[in-house]
Each structure stands twice: as structure tokens, then as C-alpha cells.
Image 1 (spheres, rainbow, N blue to C red):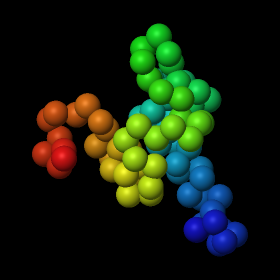
Image 2 (cartoon, helix red, strand yellow; image 1 turned 90 degrees about the vertical axis):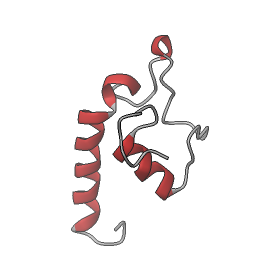
Image 3 (tube, one colour; image 1 turned 45 degrees about the vertical axis):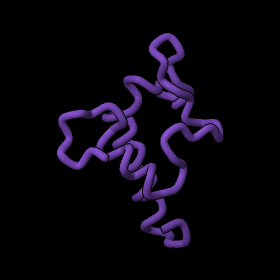
Image 4 (tube, rainbow, N blue to C red; image 1 turned 180 degrees about the horizontal axis):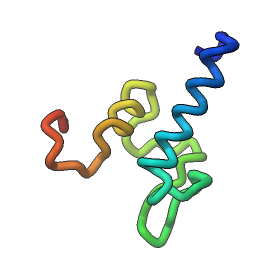
Length: 73
């Protein structure tokens, strides 16, 4: 994706839209976390739920506290 001059920017824009819609409310608009609510900083290298691409994709799709998701681990 990163090497494709058309696909790379498209993926970044779509990822930013997903972050704004699904993540920024808790992790902040800059992804630095909201410490008062216990939401972690996403800009550091401390991966609480796994830092590989599969773990990140799973977390984005299902969250970490979603007991109602039928695909929950």
C-alpha cells in the first residue's frame, strides 16, 4: 500500500476517517490518549492489546471491551 502512489494516500485518508469516527472520542483527536478516562496514548510503542497488523485490525473492528460482539475472543 505504501509504495502505491494512488493507494497509499487513499488508505491514509480512510484510516483517518475511521479514527475520527471510532477512536478519537476516547483517545483524543491527536491520539495521545485521555488519561482521565484511562484511554491509552496511541502514539507510543506500548501496545496493550498487541501491536502487529492483525491485532490492530481486530481491535479496530471489534474493540477491546465489546462483550456483545459475536466475534469476541
